[in-house]
Image 1 (cartoon, rainbow, N blue to C red):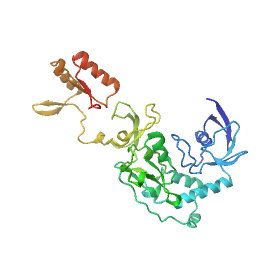
Image 2: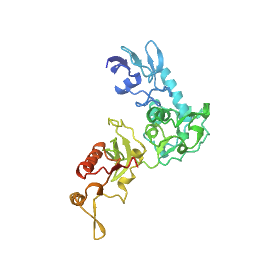
Image 3: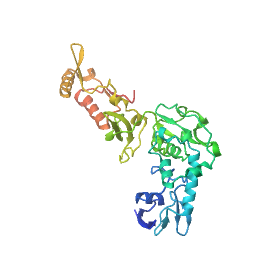
Image 4: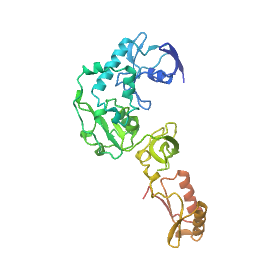
Length: 345
């Protein structure tokens, strides 16, 4: 791919053709405030915070401006600073700012931008603070929707449309009354939402937060065990308990995306009734055994069956290769076609 050279704040930056000025700057370690941009989504230019000045053009948004050879970009100027400050102040003054009780405290993009821009309390006092208090949508069993913390960046809308393909939410109403809503403004559980949590994972503020997620002490790379796709993920561990799951962006299988089971269905891992060792029935009671002992017992028992005395049921949680081996065992070794799959039943 063709590479281009441009100058950002006096620093020569190399970028790939087709990249935006914002992407080139962030890749080079130059911060430009942004709220509606996400690398997984098409640029929308909604927040207007990524303003830059380009020599010969003037002020423009960097997320939708493609890089060009020899381009000279300034990320700071009095005009840019004023425009950003006003935009951020209007967002904050209409935002429920009880940050310490917010699940996104410390990881909130609005907080990050406010610190960078430098919000002054005196200027905020001159603005009319919001008195609107919208009900929190707690209908979904996995996450909460708080429209009072929403900044209307549209990341959730674009995620649901571009990545998931469900289009369960969109902008609704007009002007000051604009919100992100389902069809008919019904609870999210009554919409086309698949509860995959992709919008929750990308929400830059506390408008979409998981119900029971806690910050982990460490992460362990793993593979989802719910089906044979093999999605890569990271298990967030706290002590000896899995408290969070996020998709592995570097995985070629899912590229960081997860379904509802992969993201939220991890409670079975630490469930007290989960079997962690093989059990063999002796004298009418199940007792723990080693894997070698259990496999030897199964092999010995199977030796007494042939043909239609035997049947196998494959699992959707196994890989294609494992299911292939099971059907070969059923047909070539046990001598029967009595095999079926749980996904078909």
